[in-house]
Image (tube, rainbow, N blue to C red; front, side, top):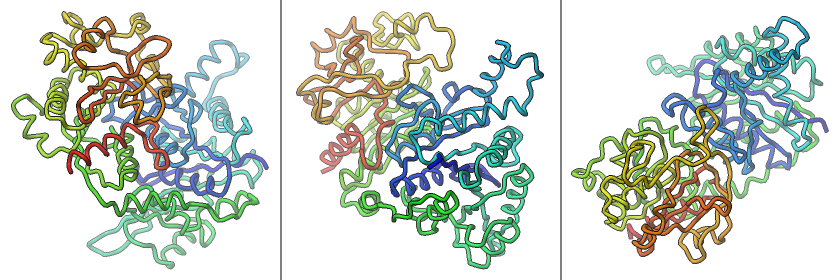
Length: 535
């Protein structure tokens, strides 16, 4: 069987959930026994989102091989339970960088370099790259942005060309659109969808299926109207009604027969009913838990929930594993001070200090760490959160009032967090941090080793600064233990406080590897400890 390609576009408005629809369809095809992956093509000119502020684009997701990618790749991995890679996220910036580099090398033999064919050829090459490995039966390609945007036009043209070049049964186009509801008229309106599909068709791409985001069910009459005016077959207009959880969407899409439409259009000889038993069991656990806990997330970007998307989803997974609903309360670290921290964190069953960069809000994080340490509240610090554990302990236990990270105070007399040695000569910001999966050796008998059930682990990183090992002996002598270290460099990866109910800081990002079917042990451990603290 040839590799099949499904292209997913969106219209009318952004943030309709193309990534969730792509993930849901991929999950259904995977449950039929097919080998599936998803890739995202983003129209912005940044090479990757690594230098973007989280307020601009949500969290930056990191893959095993060290790619800084769009947050939708996190959805892909969580739904499919398989890793993505650098090849799964392509931006306009990457496309143009490749083409311009080739032009400078003389690869085009003196020709005038143009959007068509040179840019579109490079887009097509990238779209087919994963399919040529022979590892997948179906490749889903999500096109970022909204149809009609100037930036996405070359991607739409590339899709048009591929649908012409590849056998008809090897490609499929799905268009996600919005059906707004006018409350005054008590009516769903289809005109925005008609305009969106017309704009897509003007680009030469005719959708095989239209998925309609809606707050209210679509009647059969409304579906027929959309099919008629958008030139799709009857029965190929399906609804994506607002769901109580993103993890419910695969079941909704199965009820709408989206996976059946896909295998029929692509002539895949596999009509087995998807095995979603484990997925349904997970949904039962998150919908009807026996217990509940309140976790406070202390961070710098709390105004935008997508800035901590993987962390929030990891709590959903950990809650299901503990038969517990986790209420995550976000707290802006800029608003936390020594004289109000007790009031702000009162009632917290657990505290997580989130990752981030820069000086803003750091002192609030230090205050939150101290409160968790002194009050015996279960605590997890991630990346910068772990570094603030170290700073707080140095100041308030070791008595080094000037202890700091050299990221914010290069002149500190006690630089307990410092720039990594291999970062000191780096001047380029994009893609130069310590990125991707690295191994870690956990100390036998430590809390971390108990949670993981092993002493050999591998986790993903995204940082430039590290624990300054010159001070390690003093920390350990006074109670803060380095329970996890990189076996090759000695870099401190995990710190913990023996005797505390639950106090762990991780330099790596555990949230990136949490999935519904494999919840992360640090998050499940924190939620379990929070339950015990609440009890």
